[in-house]
Image 1 (spheres, rainbow, N blue to C red):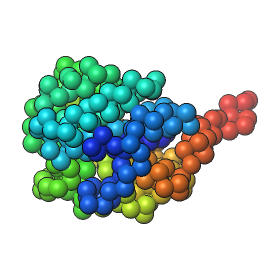
Image 2 (image 1 turned 90 degrees about the vertical axis):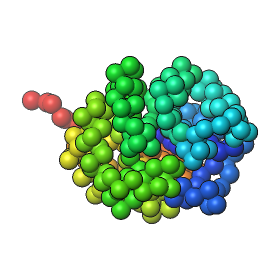
Image 3 (image 1 turned 60 degrees about the vertical axis):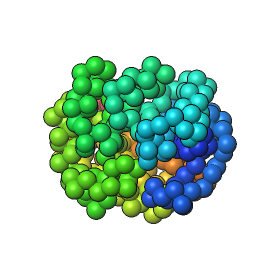
Length: 259
């Protein structure tokens, strides 16, 4: 089970939002690269980075766009673990730019709903290991544009459509739980993994070690990881402790395989 710390960037700073609302923002650091380095020192083997300004308004060359590009480039260059990047990637040019800058995986959200042909072409060009779809759900329906717009597309329908285009991995976020520290929607994650047949990374609501533990039995169903944000920043979850628990779960029990 991968545990993937989140680094959300807005106006060049590391922040956390509650349910994606900019009015409910907490700034944790002015230097996102330093935050990323901390999680890597504590054992993270992959980071989840989100350009929040891009998610809300991808176009333009304003102050926020420039600050975020610089922050993301500095972050990627400062660590030696893979980075998956989401937020405002709406075209093949955006995707190419991110991958050329050293990002390992791009996460496509709004474009998956509005322009699925872009997803199909991205998979063709760069492969399904480097193109992930982010499905953000509210009451079972996918939402877009930084969680502002209701797409009217059921989450499972979108997942199956993406699978038909060659997608193998998705990030599923329960928007109502994101930033709330109320616990993961484990049932929804499990159902989506089983019915879609995709590899699912869960997100939204992680509070404590118990949330991670609840996901471990779901690995066989296709749940391959979990993104952790506010719980790390608020201190309700210790990254090293969570990683140790997952490593112990992966080790064969004493005597296993013996005659």
